[in-house]
Length: 116
Image (tube, rainbow, N blue to C red; front, side, top):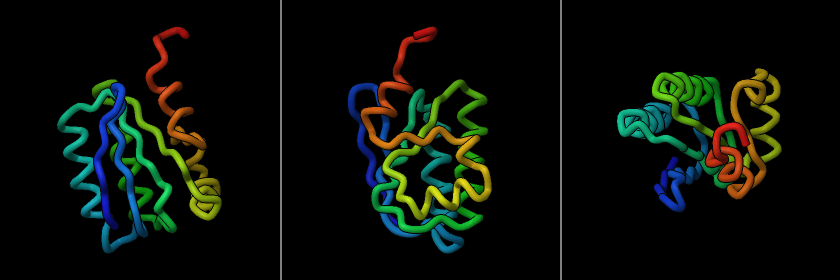
């Protein structure tokens, strides 16, 4: 798995490539831990290059969401493939995670003024 960080218009984006499995979940955990430590107000994971997520990857995402909630940070996934979306749906994580089809949709949702 490879990660690329991008910041644009108040949004911090991590573009991920590869599979998120037991072998690379510790690396993703470190990256997300650094994001939580930086207290990112809005973080988006771009899953365009992600082909598979296993249970360790799912646990890593959940762990970050909980950390972000503690400091009021928002979090979303974008560009999730049908295959990965099916995994999220099977374990009902799509009810817990904010998933948007595009970066523009995520930006609109995460950066909307309160009460808008």
